[in-house]
Image (cartoon, rainbow, N blue to C red):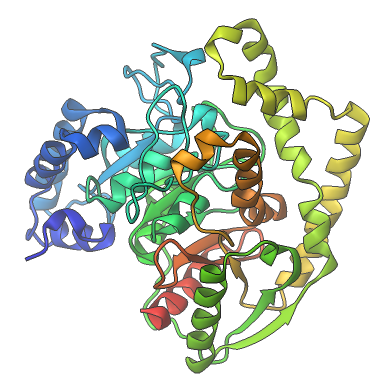
Amino acid sequence: MTSTRYLPAAEQGRLIAAGMLDPVAQVELYLETAAGRDGRMAFTRLTPNRARFEAMAARTRTKVGQGRSRLDGVAISWMDSFDSAGRVSEAGTRLFAGRVPECDAAVLAQASAAGGVCLGKTQMTELGIDLLGVNSIGVTPPNRYDPTRVTGGGASGAALSVNLGLCAMAVGMDGGGGVLVPAAWNDLVGFRPSIGRLPQAGMVCATQFDTPALMARRVEDCAEGLALIEGGRAPDLRGATLSGAHFLLLEGPVYDDADPACLEATSKALGVLSRAGARITAQSPPVVEALMGLCFLIETEIHACWQALASANPLKVTPDLMRVFEKAGGVTAERYLQGMRQLQELRRVWGRLVSGYDGVIMPSVAQLPPTYDSLLIDHDLFTTQRKLACRNARLAALSGGPAITLPTGQDMVGLSLLGQNGHDEKLLCVAAAVESALG
């Protein structure tokens, strides 16, 4: 019999509401399991006292039919980029060693108010910047399916926490792949909401491209998770179908240097969607390459946020991260402002393009995760792999709309759907139909 640790978050919520799953017992099971070696690879620290208190409160509410949400009593992990009151929040860097915030991040406070149980804080890359999942001064979680390969990051520990059944769902931060990349490489569902939909207050490393994002086992979990951290209500995903759906399949740069295994898995997935009734139109619209040409804006924002602090504390920053800062620092203010103006126009073009489809499809990451040892040996490979890992995911951040990655059935290969800004619920419904078709 499968342990209840591996049940999807939404299913756990239903069982708790029906009195068939005790949230206190479930939290104790998670805490006991997370105290082992796997837990140390996934979590920077657990929050047992808080988790037990929140679980006991949820049990009391559900006994009298006063559950606050569909995930009341469900255990959730939080990337260490989110402030948690009275607990060390270091964002994967020595720059914030021993930092203890006074208040919860806005989305954590909202989740707790709606009954979510904070189980602990998960490992991440330094400031969440590296999207391969490597943290040379801390813990680099292994890939669930091949321990010699990286997990992907910045929310590396978040992916491991869900995949190993150490929590029901994880909240991470995505500024261009922080959640989408590790979700894809670990066969999870990763959902990045539209830019500006969720508050950034209490997110340690946030730029204007960052947003709280979710990682779970099912699309329904992400839909309910969005409602939990936003204080809203999830869309009804029942009856979602691909019959009559029309998708735009991106061609061109999203496939550059693609791994044959990714090409094969994507092709098979597209065949399944077509047989399920979806119509797929393949194009390489110029707006995609134009948006990708503005990736320097993301790097420039990171440089603006952290360069001064890093320069003042050089011994607390790894050489690799300093090289990222130095490269991004070469952009002039004039070039940055010009790029931002161009971005706003391209987002309007993208919005008009996407509005004609039920979703835009592309490989989540067109490469398999590299091995950890190869990245340590070859710095040039590290740089190349980092660019490839974040390339497609950064399109989601630059376009501004919602994005979701789904498992294809091939280990470590995900399929992404992108939507129009502000149309998150529509994308979740479409994703539920795709998920059902892919099985």
